[in-house]
Each structure stands twice: as structure tokens, then as C-alpha cells.
Length: 227
Image (cartoon, rainbow, N blue to C red; front, side, top):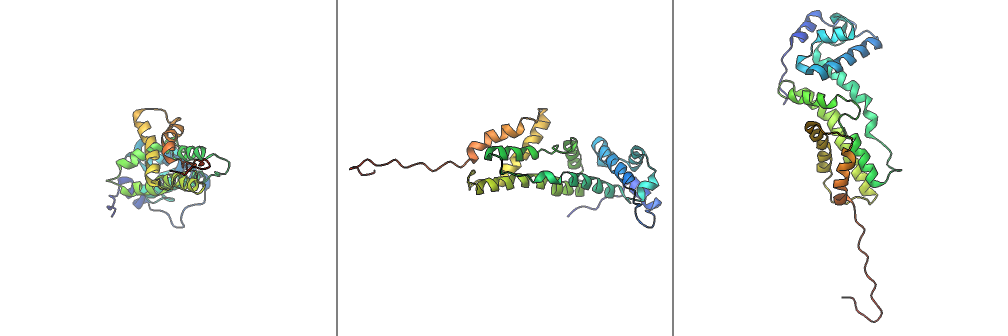
């Protein structure tokens, strides 16, 4: 069960200012500016250090303007994350029909990259992991909307390749997808380039995944019994 969060100074200020009656004004440009400023501050400062004041300054809006839209920093961050999740939703589905089996798996592993859509994603994931004790809800949101859809994509592609008869039926798809996902974090922490990860990972895994054709039985010569 998630531990109750402590109210921050910014959130207390939001309560004092109070969201004004009537809800958020329908100004998409202001909402966009605040969301983008929040996403930048998340990458630069992390959740605990970022402040509503800094976000308002970056977005060139007043604190009351911001609080009329979001009552707390947590609510603002949830919407900022949701903005990114919606932007990248289309990456989880792609047409395999024109791809060879190994090529299809390589493309799935490429889309598994946390930074496939957002170049700051690896830093953000590290920030949220650091918040696991103070604000576990953030890591739960990340798992549900940024991690699981990615690993599920690889599992789904492996299932489709099984249906095509290209991949063995007895493989552990969950573990394979988890290993592929972890390769990006290993590359990040080792300071290595990630551009070669999809092809390199699949080249190692493919010999163990590929479904080999059944061996052909040798024809028996006339007059001889098969042994």
C-alpha cells in the first residue's frame, strides 16, 4: 500500500491560493507552456527539488495562474507525465507484415528504448526511482504507463512471430523482454552508445529463439531396412 505523501511547501501554497471557482480556464497555450516547463524541471531538478515558482517562471505565468489549473505539484506532474504518455502511444503498435522475423524483433527492441520518444526519459526514470520512498505513486505511474507498454510490445511481437512459425513455442517471453529492456540501462550506466543495442541484442538472442525446421528423414535405399 502506498505511503501517504507529505504536503510540500508549494502544495500548501496552492491550498492557500486555492484553485478559483469555475475550474481551469480554457487556454490551451498556457496549459501547454506550463506542462512543457514542468517536464523540463522534472529532468533538470527532479520531483522533490522542482518548485511551482520555478515552473511558473519558466512558463512565464504567475503562480495563481498555475494554481487555477493544478491545485498541487503532484497533480501537475501527473498531467505532465500523461502528456508524454499520450504523445508516444502510437509507438507501441506497428505493422510486421512487411518485415522478416528477425527484423521485426529488432524493431520492437528499438522501440523498447526509454528515450525512443523523450531524450530525457532515462534521467526521469532515475529521478522517479529515487522518489520510490518519498513518493511511490510516481514510480507506480511510470511502471504502468512507460515500462509495461514497452515490454509488452516485445512480448506481443514474439507471440506474433510464434504464430508465424518463426520463433520457438517454449520461450520465456517475459524474461526476454525484461532482458532487452535492461540492456538500455546497462548501456546508459556504462557510458556506451545505444544505437547498436537493438541489432546487437537480437543477434545474441536470435539463435536461441529461432524455430529450426524439423530435420528431414533420409530416404531408405531399395532393399534396405531403416535402422
